[in-house]
Image (cartoon, rainbow, N blue to C red; front, side):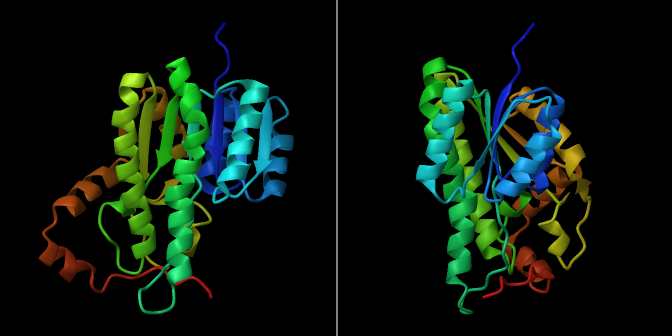
Length: 256
């Protein structure tokens, strides 16, 4: 009988992170869950008494606290099989309107938070020559979306970082998986004041993601229709992209 998977997930209190935690709990995994909202994590832990779950009320912008949580998880459960850097935020932000802090916050969580999540686990995985590091990027990182320059930039940075990391880790026995969601039904997308084509339920998305991670897929986009949208966006000439998206609806700016 094989041992249960050990899975460490950031941003696990709601949305995609909570759905991934629920999916891995259903699969019998030992879980380490990180989020700022400790009450939500405690509720999840109490609602899954059949699973071994450790929870850590940590902001991924606090690298020291995140590293401490990683050490605690390893001490209690051993090195995880899968680490999912999922924590993310999305704010509308526009240059010239005093939104510098919004730009910084989005990059700190979505990009630097991902690096900080992997940092305390990488050496242990390399020593064991096994394990999978998973980053939640976004189709929004393919092109710079007007009004979402902070979010698009952070997800583009995450995608490029994950690609570099994949090549670095491959000869060391550690897999790196990039997941690029399209529109997923979560509290984050509920605030979007524009149509969201191919909107996918979070639980269905989590099931697809867990299967892709099990296959060690290098790069995956869900829902599948967004793969074609992403490819089209990628090759669209700049003059046509500018003309099409100049008047596109935009995410509201963060409250200041």
